Length: 461
Ligand code: NDP
Image 1 (tube, rainbow, N blue to C red):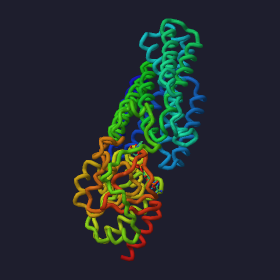
Image 2: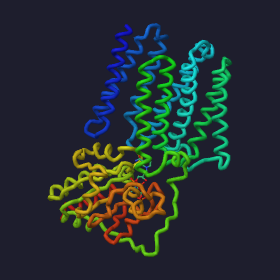
Image 3: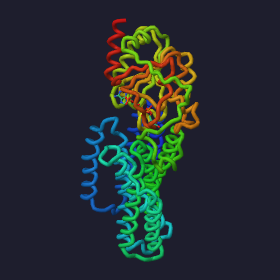
Image 4: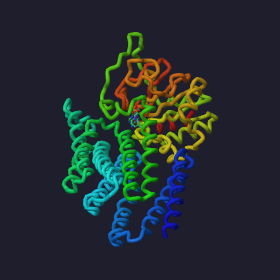
């Protein structure tokens, strides 16, 4: 039986890793996801083969409840609500880890007689698991707009409060490690870590939540791995380490693509508010507005068009009309590609997922590094609801809050059309120099409505 279980675990790990590899590209992502999910089923079956696993009716009830809640929730969630869905799923993982540690504490009479590494791993899992659960719930609340998205902090008392709560949790944990088996101590660890999770995430602005969710996801993975160590469960160790490592890499890549440190994101105070920027006297402040018919004519006579999608396309759900527009242009002999910035939208891969959903051929989606040199030989760059990821201030203005963030070199195109509703700022809350460039025309309106109008005009050209 042990050999069978070990073999099944090895199969499950191979499927996790193979599935994860599939997630590196849009073409293989769905298959990768299914393979990893099947791997998880194999791991669960292997775990259930453990002798004296416990109360079967309770286990079946748990699995049944999970399936009943999980499947409809995943089916009904909109693409734009995916970050909060991930926050919830991640949160319950952390909560489960914290509860397992508590159950083990009771089961073993306060970890009495356990090896030191088991006690340390269990207490680490309790702290990080509880922190991730409550932190993820706040992240969910902010993304869902149940909790105000603005930073809610205790001002100058914030850091001392965080330190006090962390010391409280560690203090209780040390007392347990030193041999005190009183249950109030583990409850103390749970309470201090839970409140810490709440007060660490509350001061962070709502728009930074996707990065926070990714960070908490990495923490949950590490706490699950620690629980695996304590319970001597290889599946939990491997799956937890995979989640921890991939979550850390994702967080790091998101931070790099936004040119911000993880520390500055956790410190909050960026996004969702207007930041004053030095624009310089020499900048021409005139903006040129255009119409759907002018845009249609401009694009119909272009050789090459690059579509630059952003958060506004996601909000307007304009991906299907954008694809229709591209098809129409291709029928007229225009070459169309899409420029994908790594942090366009509000979650990693946001644009890839939307455009894949609209059946845009994968080979038309070009990563930033592959397409940036192409803008110079492009007749029209059509920016659909993207803002920050096209702002030349990131390259030209050292005083800009986004200076150093890699951007799409849209301003190198021969002409630029920007489709958005107003002169409002994007996520970073700063003005976009691109809009004042003499070769830029602004097509004001909702992305879906305006692309629809351009299509109508294009049909008549
Ligand atoms: P931005 O948030 O910079 O800008 C989006 C623009 O879309 C707005 O300026 C808005 O202008 C416009 N818009 C909104 N609704 C509509 C609509 N219905 N029709 C047309 N336009 C609309 O988006 P980007 O994609 O350029 O940049 C993403 C930003 O998010 C970056 O700053 C990135 O760092 C940040 N971020 C990304 C994460 C990720 O993982 N992808 C995670 C966290 C943050 P208007 O109101 O005038 O229409």
